[in-house]
Length: 308
Ligand SMILES: [Zn+2]
Image 1 (tube, helix red, strand yellow):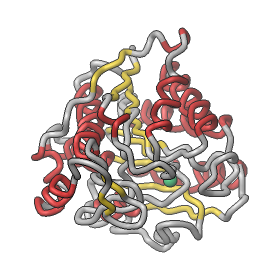
Image 2 (cartoon, rainbow, N blue to C red):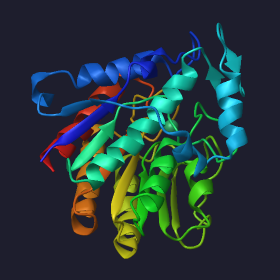
Image 3 (cartoon, protein in one colour):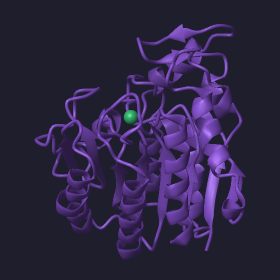
Image 4 (cartoon, rainbow, N blue to C red):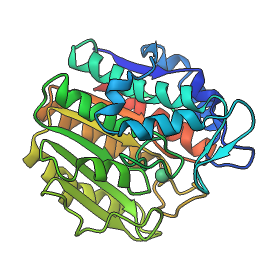
């Protein structure tokens, strides 16, 4: 079976400014790391724009219209201190969400075992009615709601190992027991949510980790908390919010993981998908701000997906 890679050139053109960490160079680094002959077996597909109806399952129409109307024809527009639009940002955001919905359609249709969406802007901080934290639309959550409503899946999980808590995904899921969200993240850290006591309707698992905690506590969090809860939930589709900013070289956080941890966690998630979801797994890029670590970590993640 096949691993699919969805991306789009618009995602390279979204440019929040010269000194912004969420730079086009991030996606260039990921694509360069996936360009070698060992990745020739990946089937590469152009990400479509998300249908507005897919966005509207999660985001109120006023949010979608506010984002798209704010896109400047030149220069930059800041939605908050972190979240900045350039002329290509609207198209990039539509293709980033569309990558995840298309990848889910393909994996549910059994065209491939799994898929990775190499996209930006990232999504997991975007709440239903609020763009924040570099995120405009919540790509993973938009995909999960399409899987629920269009494909009729009764149990969809998002697993988020980005170093930041995915407050947006949690906000989207916390009242719906057909959806499940699990996150490991450095705590305290932006955005400040993700305490262990935030459990939704029993469908949210947050495992906050102390700065400098490294590999041991991260793997124990998965072995003792995240994976047992996911086994109880029995997801029919596993969506991964794959941020690589918990890497020890990342400039925005101090969780001190390395590529071996990303290999380990990806193997665990592939096994989880095999147990419950006929292998169906769709991963989408969230954070990761050291370009070398980001490329190496994404490559390590894809090697495991290709071997699934
Ligand atoms: Zn992050």
